[in-house]
Length: 191
Image 1 (cartoon, one colour):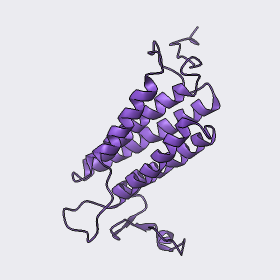
Image 2 (tube, helix red, strand yellow):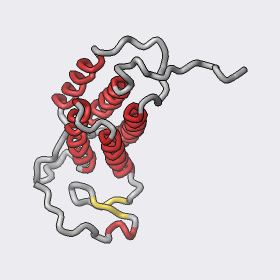
Image 3 (cartoon, one colour):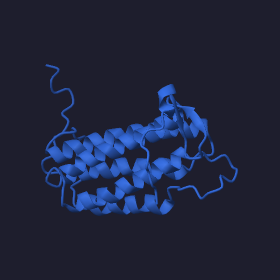
Image 4 (cartoon, helix red, strand yellow):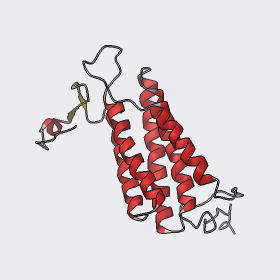
């Protein structure tokens, strides 16, 4: 259990922060960018949940929000190949598979797409699309981290990739199971 008794440490006053292994890096470090963007995505998922309160997607996204903290914990503890003296929390293939199962379950309710959809429609759908785009950015930041440090848990990237797909499917669900999707009309305003 995490216990926070002091909220400020003043470490950030000098542009530094501590990772999960207590090593210190700059606030602009690629690792901090990755888990910071995961945190941002989690906050936007919370915003989406406020438009879905009490629905089955809300319950699913509550689980996802907890897993996003797991993912942030995974990213903030570098895998150096040495024993850190504790068991780091890592995203697992089982968590990724659970997202895949949720995508398949919710997508089965939808008609196939015949066009791209705009991030619009109901308020809940627009918020889910917003969460999806921030999740994609978190994925890009995590891929950059993976490219810089080969010893990154590959399940982190897979999790974010599947999560953005789930958010897309749930955004369509929030648009009356896709019936109220706002479709892209290529070149519609060129004339």
